[in-house]
Length: 237
Image 1 (cartoon, rainbow, N blue to C red):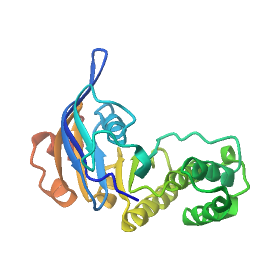
Image 2: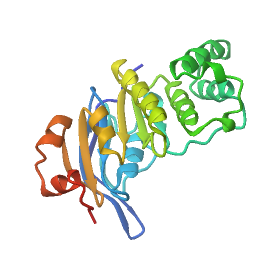
Image 3: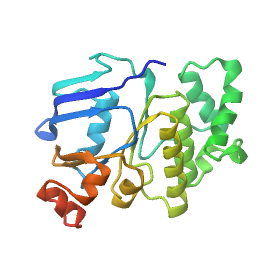
Image 4: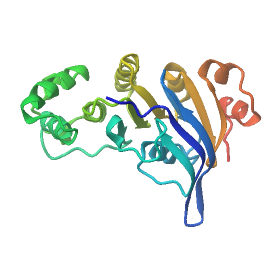
């Protein structure tokens, strides 16, 4: 499948009525280890993910996917923070996603079994999806996103409100996807999670990028005062 990478944002801004959600964003998302967006609530993390996915059109600026300004999101998938489960079984949820991805009906059942096994839900295939625990729902949501065989996977705080065991399960799945060549771009409010997963870190505050750097440099030698304060646990208002 052709890749959407690199995804390049140039002076991207998003205004809704009188609210500035993003302002002057310059960011290149390229192949490699996960890119993790961090920052306080309302800093623009979710908006940036939606713009990069193509779910939201910028008010101004330019975004390209592999050099194209208009690109169908065939190689992109998005996992929402609170995924909606269809009123059907776990397997049927995945089969629906496979159908939407254009997988022939004759191949969906076998592919669904592969995806269920990859996220550890093979024993719950016939359970109603809405009866799953929070962690199980997140794993099912991840399996649905991976049904598209994406080259880029966007995730909005995928472990928010999960217990440590469920968080570890999701993180292991994301690292496995990254090792298979999927570009993971995710937001998190948890700096410990960012340390565990990130190859690159982007710190946002009030809709602007404060700092973007390799994770090792960001956590040991932040170059801005706001980044140093954020890492120290100060509230960025």
